[in-house]
Length: 367
Image 1 (tube, helix red, strand yellow):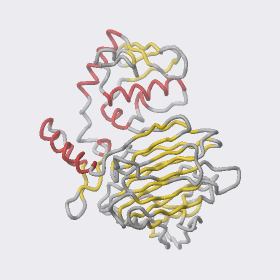
Image 2 (cartoon, one colour):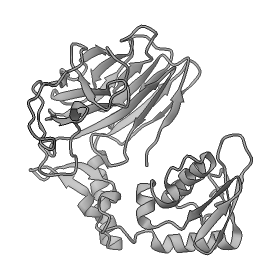
Image 3 (cartoon, helix red, strand yellow):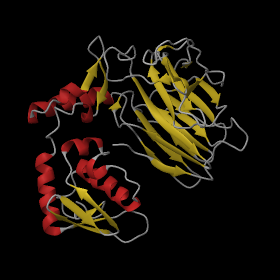
Image 4 (cartoon, helix red, strand yellow):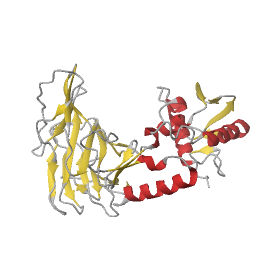
């Protein structure tokens, strides 16, 4: 599931990306985000909010990891374009130049845009020359091999294919943080939607409080793989296949089950039936957390209907739950429906429907 600090607006001056691998600090900050690669203590990366003048988003990368082979790749999208660009160590956008004859044939980038960090405790500061739009900060224990591809709109970068053994980056441990500037706000999240690799956490430091996501510990991938093997032995589902290993047999990342649709297509089925029967009998309420009253919902047959929205929710499948973006969880543009759908799917992942207090989602009384 994706966790998002919904918006850090107006007063936000910076955020830290804290990693067991790296730390990033803004040049100036009253507010900061920490995003960490598997550290019990912050090892960080910081982004400060862009001022009116271009290029005010400063990123300081600090190596807090026991490796002198860390590389960081700062990626953003050009304004009014779908073309991705990397920001180089000197703070300029990499402009890929390629003679690509076929649209479907990517070629290696002609420049190494990895920002090399020194030994543990060293730091590098990058000032963004353009806004961070649908951006990513990749952190890799090693170098990533990136490619460019020609499309109708020009030449753009390709992201690593993290689940494909043919990809040159498959054996490299890496993770990434997503960031996007929207006017006076910045949106940031350490995304675990598709996989967990180099563990990343995040912390927001304000003048009044500090909140954060600690992320996995430094050995998190190994521990997750160990527990998945134990779970497979217990329930028979192919959890072990989700743990991807490099050429030496060392775990490098763990995939989300939605990348094995056949192996897990029935995983939630029994629970879905029990939840559906419970809502049919007792109803359910959702707190959309927007200041309005709880939304009451009831099931009749294969659909759930709710107050404040006329659109019915179909009964979900296991595939819907793994992805949280289809069936009753798809985004429709109906604000109330979308808010219910997000909470509906989260409750399946948390398995809180049938617990005492589970007739309100999310609910503080769930035990």
